[in-house]
Structure formats: C-alpha cells, structure tokens
Image (cartoon, rainbow, N blue to C red):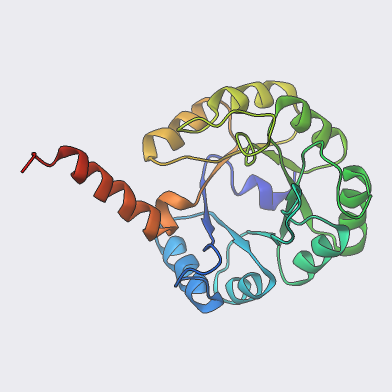
Length: 229
C-alpha cells in the first residue's frame, strides 16, 4: 500500500473543477479553491487540466489526483497515454483516467496505459469506472485505486439522484485495491454512508466547489416552497 494512498483512508478528497465557460474556469481560482478546501480539512485534491494541476501542486501540500478532460468521444477523462503522462508530469501524484470497458482513442489497452504511467513517471493511477465488472478489470489491469466516478455517466448505466452506494459496497468486496466513492455525493451524510459501504476515501466536488449548482439547489427549493401569489 502506498503511503500516499494510505493517508487518504477514511478521509475527504475535494474535487476542484469548473466547467468550460464558467467564471471560475481559471487556474488561479481553482488554486484558491483548493487552498480553501485544505484549510477545511481535506486530505487530498482532485483537479482537471494541466494548468490547474501545476497551480495547485505549487500551493497545496496534499496528495493531488489529476486528470485531463479532452475530446468529444465517450472516453474523455485522460483519454490517451499521452494525456496521462502529461498529467503526471504536471505534478499529479495520482493520474485519474477512464477505466471503463470502452475503447480508448489511442488504441491502447487500459493495462498498457497504466503500466506505462507507472514505468515512465512513477505516478499512481486511479481508474474511473461505472460498473462492478469494470472496477474488477481495472484492478486486474494494475490500477492502484478504482473509483465509482462514472457510474450513471455511461450509456449502459443508470443515473440516480445520489451516489451509487451499492456499487461502492460491491467493489469493496470484490477488489484488493482501495475503492474511491465519487459521484453525486451531495451531503455529509451521504459521504459518511459511502465510508460505511466500504469506501477507502470519498471524493466530493459539486457540493463543495460548484456555486452555480449549489445556488440552483437553493433557488429551486425556494420556488417549490413559495406560496402561490
């Protein structure tokens, strides 16, 4: 077990990302968000894009999970080996990449990609998966951790309002590597449920770092509760 992965056990990783076109889509803004998350007790940071990764690595002394979203294909989370190597060289301790069964744009297998990242950079690899079979296969392919990140975000999985805790539990029982609960974790109670389901660590993004969505939750609730005029 890597000491870095061990340091995340039963703790929170905050995903500091902004969508394209948003006011917060800026490396310095994400750096400040990551610094704020660290002050709040986060044990690690997840960040997207090479500039964001470099800015956060210089500012925050926490394990950094990095990824690079690129392309319009189904596989767009660190889709190729070249993307993965760039993420590691930008400063990510852990490279997060698509760990589904879908074909990768560069034609490499998941195992080939993971092995090359390990050999060429020494970085660890997190496989973002959507099903139990994908998580088991990713662990067998050499992933250091597997996550439920893509559950509900592939054409063959169903999206629920909250986290897929059943998948967390089944993965924790099936694989020998740590399981990361990620995806639609909107409350502290849900984060705690994910740990009880067997997660090694919990990643929360939107509910902490995306004010547009959080504001929308509140405005919708008020609209529903407002008396008719």
